[in-house]
Length: 346
Ligand SMILES: [Zn+2]
Image (cartoon, rainbow, N blue to C red; front, top):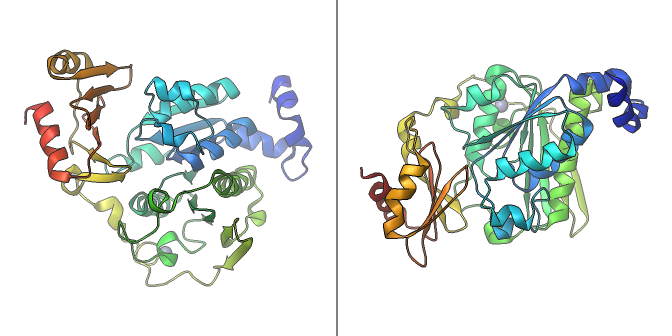
């Protein structure tokens, strides 16, 4: 640690459980955050200010006006610039602490890229909003023995748990069955308030600081639930919830990681009246060529990261250089696929 580090992190170093030794460990650590929405924004900000050495931020989405109410890293200007969340976050985080190496990844975490995106980090933080991605993180965590910190918030309630692979219960021990889309409340249906997100993400970030600086005994060791509106705080003891017959940590079958490309090539519903289409194979698209091809049939806007094509009043399509597309303004899967195929002439 140099003199600048000692000055910058002085208040944190003075906090006895961290101290100089803990700070040094933080500076030497590499963390990934999956999902840079509301939870990811708060976690990332805390970790970057704390001086984590390297931070990889992974997010598939482009900023929208409805994000600003709770996704604290972003500004109106970011929305106007049509920035992907990962790109806007990288810009902001670098301006907060330029000594942290920020690596923005504009992509969806999938079985195809999970090992390469998460395999080299010390810790994974959940900023996602869906169960498939969480089961995937859980599989990676167990397979590669990397801890991860689950967090989820809906309405004014949230929960979080720190998973130490093959030590604590895993996510599938506690949530053995995937909650099908539509069965659970989501932020789409039940809304969400910003302080609830802050609370859960702050607990996640604190757990990260404990783990990374070496205070393993201080981890809360529970499935911590909080309802801020009704003032209910419930730390559920989970030390006995590790299941021998858990397919993931017990039998070491990593089903989510093993899902083939086939299943992924399909479209997925993102909520928000948006459908995501993934090409299911490696693809490199020239946004310039695409822009000149699409310009005669609709309005085209672009920035270095993406192209937005307004096909008509109701539907616009966001196209990324890796072939991925977000079809905004519909929940009709067949229509979205047809539009995608029209654009790429498949
Ligand atoms: Zn398990």
